[in-house]
Image: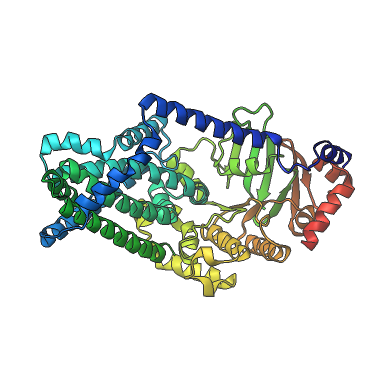
Length: 272
Length: 263
């Protein structure tokens, strides 16, 4: 009691946290500031220049891109659907592959340290190669089209989903695993009866997120030759047909929002 | 009466720890007997319990379940031995998204082949027995509710029914009432004692509340720093011995138990 009075007299205020906390925030802010300054100097990028050139950017948008023009509505719609189907197909395949793979990397299922490490690091490697790079590589072997896009999306989302699934499994595993192991149940039974049901909300949630992500990514992949709406947009841009391209962008935005809303509804229904 | 559980000279030291969690522990539990283990936090109560069904592997010593030594058993033999050991947990450890029935039937998985277990194809007999046990424990109306929707006391009853479904010879209850209010604690302790007598199950119960242990046990085991320092009747457990087990003067222990009673 005496001590707290003393400190409140000496500083005039009663501290509610350790003084180091405040200092850490300051150090963090300073570090970010210094890094920002260094990075802009190193790259020669001046944030103020881009602000000054805003008018040029605005002119490009208003004169070249707007108003949008539509001459090929059925073609654009078909390409959009192709992109969405591409995302769904890739997410579906990735879901199955990741589920199998994540069990190999889950401490709940596999006891062998080297199998665990192998499964986990391989997933990390695949996840950390962006889908864009996969597409470039695959377009070389499979040619331009949805085939390369499908494989690229499947690969990148398998890496991503495997990592996410492993974490989900590890989280739910401990308690349920202990209870079922203690009854003498075999490992396959424990997986099917406890781990999967308990992990289901997490698994479904990650899967839906991957569908969302893949719809956006598959648009971008189209730009480098993976087919779908992105490829169509790139074609318009290369033809300097910016007005039609801007309509494609508008369609992509609307489709993404609609799909996200649908996924939100599914998420609420399924995970309730 | 026969001892359904006997341990001899059990040792366990966790990696990175200098002092043993369990040292030279020997004791036995007879069929239908309720034995409580008391002791301060970290005394080794949970380790002792988990060494019995080898959820934690003991470093040395022997565990006999109905006369069979189990510390050397390999995978499938160990699983068979575990079927005879039911376990009840402080945090219930139910699969919250599954129904009460599904959770209760998990107790039968050890007796089924892997395929039936994976598919959840329980026998009609098991299902009827599960319903019967749920009826006896007052949970019949919740049979098809999700376990996650139940209250703590109800969840623990489901946990106990799951253990009893195994038709165990031994039941290990690890702090079964530590997450429950006093009224529910009483219901749960009554249920454990009743089922132990009814099924002739030897019960080992970890408890924090000395009063509860005194009231419900046939016998008490006191642990301190990994050693069993008391093993005897409730009446022979004097204040002096309690002070020794907990390393605290009696007035501190009584405050603790008054709180436990009033809740």
